[in-house]
Length: 161
Image 1 (cartoon, one colour):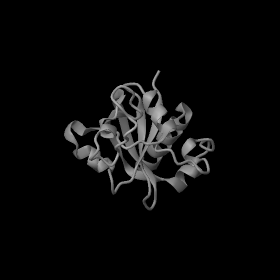
Image 2: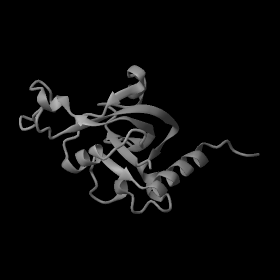
Image 3: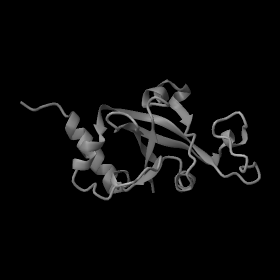
Image 4: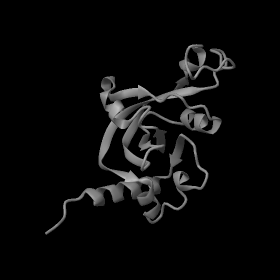
């Protein structure tokens, strides 16, 4: 059974448009250095879907959908002393950090800002909306996933005359 996720990235670091320009519209999801977020990466399966969320921007917003195309594998950046993600305690024999590969699926015609997300009925328990939630990778419940998609489709439907 598919799982759903939310992946945060600052658009000045890596945006959904950067993903679109990537070879085969695919990249590894790098830079996760929180153990809980790492564990979420490790529990992902090929075919899982995720919202691409632009954080640390005005306004922060869900901007599209991505798909996990390669399950978790050791993060090679942790082994590279020249990388900003280097971790001397992570070894090939005992890696601490992991990556998944994701592929672009869809960019929303209009971003779904955080304040509009807060207004969607039934999203009160969504991890993203919890006070103090800062995880860069987090689960999304199936009903939350569907509520967001329903809202986006209503928001982009042509006006009926």
